[in-house]
Length: 420
Ligand code: SF4
Ligand SMILES: [Zn+2]
Image (cartoon, rainbow, N blue to C red; front, top):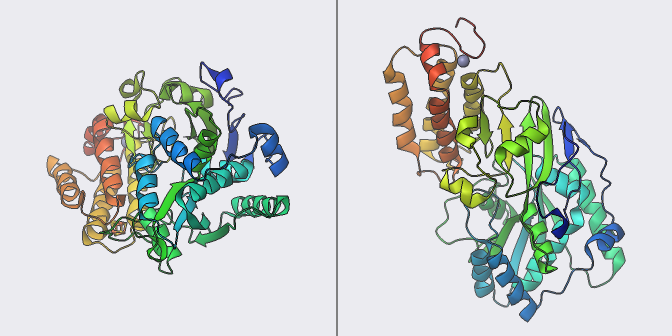
């Protein structure tokens, strides 16, 4: 496991948010030498948060635009566009800003690490956004079982209240511990008194969101970066979770680092057989696909990839990629919120067919054609991007593990050598 973390050649120029890797073993609590920042530690390290009212707020939006800041959900919509839309729509009743820390991606731990260790950076970003966009409601949205993150944020809020009377009121709200609870439409719906699940929206939440007010929902890492930009700092790093075997390691890395370098910092495998980029709804790649690919979103997008929730999941040696894909497809099918027919029936069919392939039950090309048909029927037809992610993940597996698909058809697995 790694000791170093910071991969930027210009490391001296930027103050990292996390100076050390954070390990999570077996999905449990974090293990790190880093101590959580108290408000005093935070002020000593990063300095006081500047005001973002009036002209300073307009300047912050320009900095966000120049920095090319986008959300972390994979949609890549520039944050500056969302900020301007909320600012334009906010009337006398104000707007709502949500720091979204409901980390639904099972292999991601970056939001947990940030909230547990550097909660004040997230809260600073939340207040910067609120001042810029005239917000009256500031919310931190979490999974109900994210106990460590919730305690850290509660403690941080208490410290800020004790620090001075001018601190705005921030509340914590929680939703069920499910994959889609952090989807932005689900967040808006839940905070408006509904069920935390995605919804078809004609008017974007930037114009009409929580309780009909213009609403900005940003991932907590995005808000931490806003806090850095408001202080006039560069912010070219990204938080990623590298998942290998039963360990998750959160690293802060330069986006100019290559995917291979980042994985190499965590695993001993020089060339893992395959890596799933972007989380459960991401894309399988081989080492040769990765080449010199960097973590820069533009670089990834040009290759048809996205970092999504910032997950690089390494396929363990001796593990069948098709079996792993079947497990993921089954998980994604079960996480559907069962509102849209193509998602409910299509995902279940894709998951069943993939499980059959993993068991060696495919006998002809018609099986692959059947998956392609389901995929074409559901792509782009859900209220959210969930089914598209599932289709992408399974489709990439059929390409990356094509040799094993052929071997499974003949009743043998190339990865394990077993007869099926
Ligand atoms: S597309 Fe699927 S997950 Fe998304 S809202 Fe519809 S049923 Fe739910
Ligand atoms: Zn196999």
